[in-house]
Image (cartoon, rainbow, N blue to C red; front, top):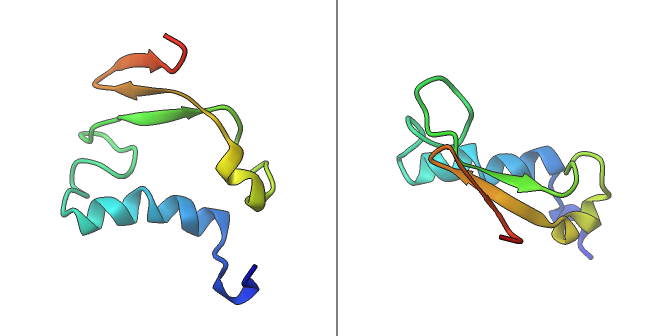
Length: 75
């Protein structure tokens, strides 16, 4: 709707991961996959880089991995 307000897929993913962890002052333990950090993550039904940006909102979350345990959405 507003092309001048759009951000890239890469920038959007960074905003909800690394940048969000920084704002929470927890970037030393979350926000990116690195040795020594928590590896909690979402399991998506499609690669965000392979779908049209307008369709990102339709990518299903199939589950999560939290504390090393897999939690599927259909369980």
